[in-house]
Length: 221
Image (cartoon, rainbow, N blue to C red):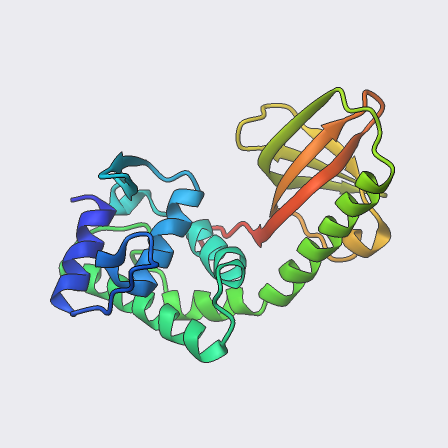
């Protein structure tokens, strides 16, 4: 079964509350948010009835997808109250616990999800601040816009930090890009951070044109 089908089965069994504004109301609010976050991470999906639905297998989900959901997706999608976030995270934990009881293999099998969630929540403040500083970089660029030869929009992984520069590798780009950042941003950035950026090539250097979400890569322990 696909992730969507399993989420739908779980929500039906548990009578999850639905809301018309949710992208996939049958899944209930919490799993609908997780479903949308996974699609944003480019997990396999297809359009069905005018709505994108996950076609990925549960084993396709990775630890970094949870990082994206907690640190990047929830704060930018009208979820602000801590109690609401805790409720959503409990629902997500319960879904994967249900998969375990059904003996359905998934990407978080044998992972202490509650412990991982606690670790990720401690990184949220840094990532949100870094996202704001990167957005400030784009504002500076657009105040006196240079001539742009080419633009790239991608989610980049920070592979190197050298002096005032970071080296980035995109999901769709095979070669590294070097980007100079202000000291305030460099003080917060860490290796293996994911940065959602639109970069402009001036032929002399890369500049930030637009900045979005920031979240860390999570590796299997």
